[in-house]
Length: 210
Image (tube, rainbow, N blue to C red; front, side, top):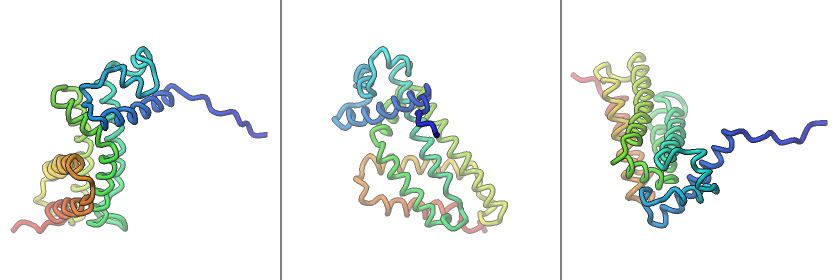
């Protein structure tokens, strides 16, 4: 007879559950108009369903919370980006448009977290460095795509892969952050297409320089 005993939860499971509750709770608090800087440890702990003392079993401080949530935000968005390829049935320009639409939805869902990271990165080097380090992973991925496309003869040889990848990632991040902060999403599809066309025809498939 098959056992119906549930697998005991691990420390990682418990941490993930606490982080998920805190993520949701911080969103509710910031939707009420508070900035992340204004939130106290007691409020954040309560949002995660733990005591203040329990908070310090999981996190060093408020900044540590933000660093962990930033990792979650970026790992999910990197997974979205990595699904796109310049060639293939779901690749090309239309696939790139779809990728940007997915990124808009992802960041809009967690817009409060994006706002908190931007807020704290302005004065905390660890959050700023974490954000920059996460962008470096996107740049590395995009650079490798461009190198592969150059070797296949589809992207001009005069494109500098690292410089172009930096433009795509950093420029795209700024547009996404601005779009999420200032638009209700009604024009996300339009902005996604303009972004995709700019990078597709301006870098991936731009004409060889004379």
